[in-house]
Image: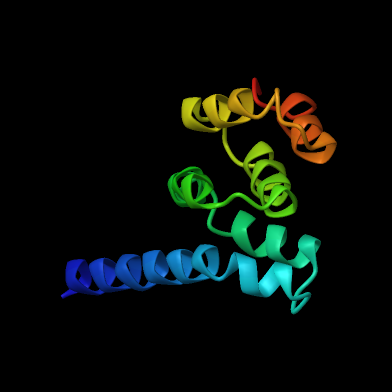
Length: 108
């Protein structure tokens, strides 16, 4: 019974994370929540957020949202995927995105 409950909680947790990440453009782009509030929410998911955020970048072209993703990843546990994503954006035309990729704690 306990294993079934743990599996259920993990599934709900994963769905909540995906729902949060998928709604980033609406939540942040339309000013419904602050950038800091969204970052805090994503940090609550800890290392589980890394996969979702790294995958999310593929479909996101908005530089402001990408800087939010990079900023959040820089505060999560180190991961080679985060480092790779940050490295890809070091040549970004957008100064904010470029700075989030360069001045982060990617090597903690």
